[in-house]
Length: 149
Image (tube, rainbow, N blue to C red; front, side, top):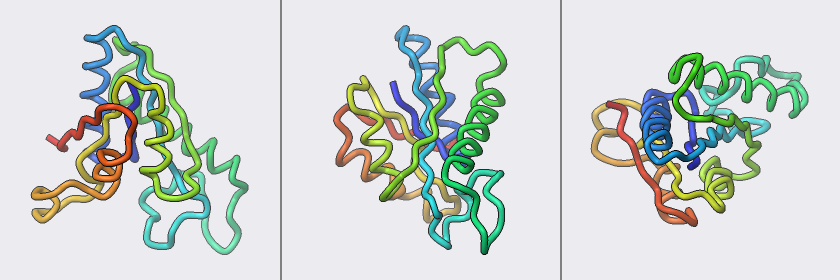
């Protein structure tokens, strides 16, 4: 089972849901964080904590390590020190959109789990985000879309 996370409340909810489902099914959990390098200028919320500031960007492998470490910390904080499911953490450099990386990561998976949207507000409660929609349309396996609460 694969779960895509980006640190948002909805992705944290997706992680918790996926961990519970994977434990119940006796499945392993592949936790994937897709990141863009360099990031889109409007997308700084998805940047790992070790990214640094412009004009000089750290090397892609340094950013990947930061994304991995941030994701591992998030998994530990959400699932605890000894989770009921074996969780493998991966940071994946998204050459295009993050959904493309998640769809690729889901090849051979029994299920892909994503949060409904990485954004907040009333308008977001009424629709799913672009990443979730793209995963539904292109994933090679069933997709579960989890709301924040």
